[in-house]
Length: 94
Picture 1 (cartoon, one colour):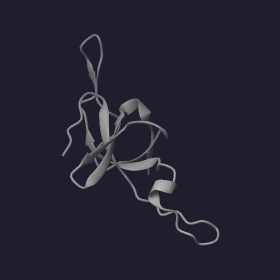
Picture 2 (tube, one colour; picture 1 turned 135 degrees about the vertical axis):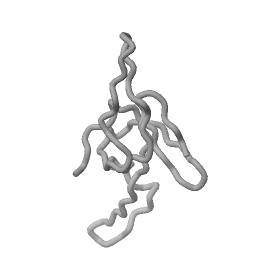
Picture 3 (tube, one colour; picture 1 turned 120 degrees about the horizontal axis):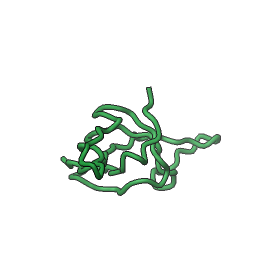
Picture 4 (cartoon, helix red, strand yellow; picture 1 turned 90 degrees about the vertical axis):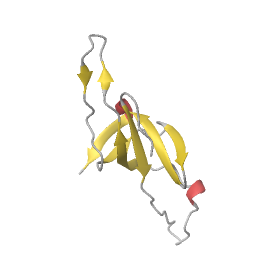
């Protein structure tokens, strides 16, 4: 498993099958990148110049909404993950 550093967060995109009005299922590579994901790992947080550490706003298991083009795609075994900075997470979905 990946262990993020600093304010980075590892996300696992939630598969969303998209269908057109005519009932055609779009291939995953033809769809837009999903913007919601489940948090699977969290770094320690942001380190300020004063040396103070600010804890991340999210925790493992949260479902989050993130910026559309944020992060780096990473493969670990047969799973794909997205590593983003904490600032790229817009909201926690409840």
